[in-house]
Amino acid sequence: MPARWIACLSFLLACATAQAGQPVATVRVAFDRDGITATRIHGVADKATGRKVTADDPVRIASISKLVTTLGVMRLVEAGKLDLDADVSGLLGWPLRNPAFPDRPITLRLLLSHRSSLTDGAGYWQTPLGGRLRDIVEDPRAWDATRAPGTYFRYTNLNFPLVAQVMERATGERFDRLMERLVLRPLGIDGCFNWDRCDAATAARAVVLYDTDGKPVKDDNHGRKPDCPVTPASDGSCDLSRWRAGENGALFSPQGGLRISADGLVRIGRLLLGNGTLDGKRFLRSASIQAMITPQWQYRRGNGQTYEEDTGDVDPGFFCRYGLAVQMLATPQQGCRDDPFGDGVARVGHSGSAYGLQAGLWVDRKRGTGVVWFATGMPDQREGGKSAFSAVEEALAH
Image 1 (cartoon, rainbow, N blue to C red):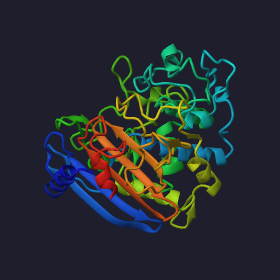
Image 2 (cartoon, rainbow, N blue to C red):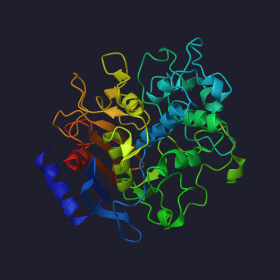
Image 3 (tube, rainbow, N blue to C red):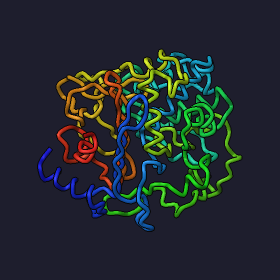
Image 4 (cartoon, rainbow, N blue to C red):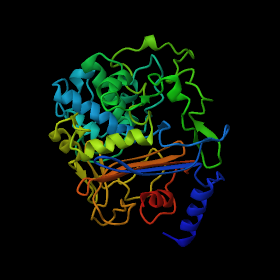
């Protein structure tokens, strides 16, 4: 890393400044199988009040939500309610097919590993309360017409609203409540998808997300829960009793809308280190964890995209191996730049980037250690690093 970046970041972390182009807040928590080993926090959760950030403050953790969502999927698989390799059309109640490849079924395994041939070209988060996710996937722009399901990796957020919709149809439960029952409550995590299931005290500690100019862009809720936790109905109303199972899996943002603290994410990391156990209690079978962390795709020229189109961050080499909503780091392959730690050590977890937040949850299962970090007030592109990660994230990695 250039010396000027190290000096700049050191000054930032020491003084907790919030100037344009520098993080408003950074949180880093290291852990092992037994618990937290070190915490480093700097900056403010809310500039308007000057409230300092803590490792217990809930933050919209972006795409790390996908990994947590998949823990819920695997619990339903173990319960016999879902099958990773079955055509999801049966549960959706309508055929999910790439129009260019109508004979190729799409499964949960393909959705979770971003090999479904879906794209974000038709959108994914805009579906309002009372709307239908099916309308998006019927738009031809939602599909890659040149590559069949199972043949190509394209990181696509739309996969996960469909996963949530399948979960709702299998259980009859609203996605955010289902995740509370299956994952958050059993793991002792005070979190929620899109705020409705968080209590007022938790919502009051929300980390406000800022852009690089210091403008609040998400969760500037002034110490309370938002008036509407979802995208309102087309008439502007927000009556959650309008929810219907399997109608709109995007409603509670399974792809990025989890509000969780860094300390809460540590419990997810320790679960991965513990092969499905946490604090001596079995949460998932070790085989389920192994299924998640086994690469379903590894980059070679022509078999996938190594960046996320939706964020505009098209720096190649960021994604090079991917399991079931689990990203693998330090891929020894030409064209891969997926090692923010710079040590060549294989790690599993997931990254997150949205609304000025950059985040990571990474575990070294061999050594039994891990780290969680997030920074707010960051640019959409990951800038300044030796890897495809940002220089700020590379500093937090150490």
